[in-house]
Image (tube, rainbow, N blue to C red; front, side):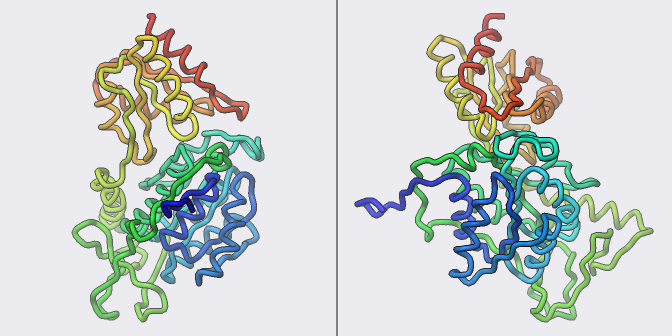
Length: 386
């Protein structure tokens, strides 16, 4: 704490994530040790009991997600943190949480893969898994921070959106941001906006757990509060009862699950434009790579190249309208990723659907090293000279 009473500390991203979760009201964490996410579990194992919360280490990540779902049904703000193979293992219960509309937060500190892969090295290879990792048609919210402070802020936002829309939310960070240490000024806790789930206003015998309000989100009663209702991963009616042979019920339910996210894009979607006005070469980068991309764009501008950076902070749902605006003048769109390309396909789709004719190209890094600004700058320069 400095002389002006500001809350300033040297924090790493995983520490900021844990602090953000506590600030958002986390009171249940279920975890299993896995590099490079373990620090989140270690910190919360120490902090939560002192704040009236509960921490439990499970036998594997499948059980972790099951515990998170159960705790949320009982009224807790719940979270787990994992990486790599652990993120794969949570997918079944993640899909259950989507279908049963159970708010919770999943942090994935990305590392190299497939399988055990590069446990200590960063990657950005879980972007599509965050969107489509569990089966079926389902909506998903996923945020990607690129700094320690933003990790704190987006953790709070993840909890708020999960509670507001009764849905799991993914914080898709990476080993670079997770282990990066930065001088970080955290906000005063009293200034942080906190959202809690809607509760029913009717008597228990009148409660329909899946009857949505005008915003598409049903109020949620806590188990143990006198509201008895059925929860299932099956297609269900407003009572929660499985309805397997009525296609209309299925269509209505799945459409509502999508619409409660799609119709609230303006509230959910976050992005950053950096020097995108009249940019002829546009870089689209997220997470840790956006830091290198910003430096590359600054260098390009010094050389007289009209380059800009569009940074999607909300990866899913993708900020397609905002990207189209940023790319209006661009003849080339460059997507640097620490993978063989995942979000570049989404960018190409958006550019095409938006009626733009910019060429979309990718820069890939597979060895666990951060993409250097010079690498991105050289590609910008080549594109500008064509």
